[in-house]
Length: 186
Image 1: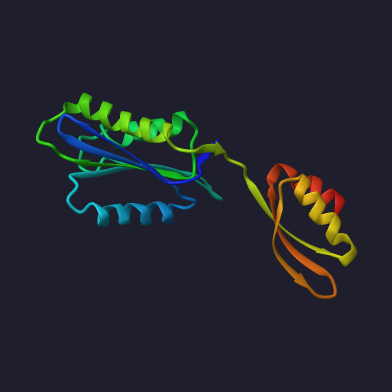
Image 2 (image 1 turned 60 degrees about the vertical axis):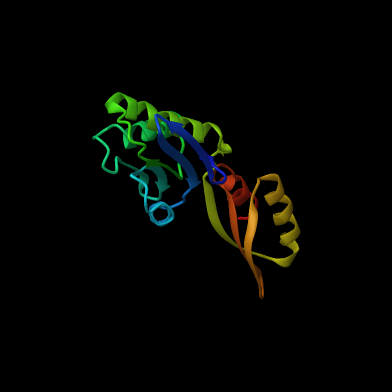
């Protein structure tokens, strides 16, 4: 699986219609819906705002796409197929269309939306998705330096620390390295 690190845009004119492709990271369905709401506010005169998203949630993968008034299957699905084909998650791709007066037909729409999605994805900064685990550890003070050293080796980080009788740490670490850390500190 792969994710995008930051939002980006791509724009193209196809047979007098203006298409604006937007890709944006979204870690929840709520993020995706807020993004779409902001796009509707930023582009109130757009003819169509088509979208697709794939978001990894604790309950599994959430996949949605919407044609936004274009003929069924000609807009949202071609975008979604690019997300699925590239194994992208935790993102939304939207394509805003300002109609230019020339009808593209079903095939033309499918190609246009698919190509805009492909370009915006190709221009995005894409990295491998690493599933993270949250841990809570209580340590003696003399173990803190060893924890920091191990976290540096295992690509983890301390999110929060509380100093009391012991040091209580909240840690974020790649899921694949979780057991290695726990083996040292339990």
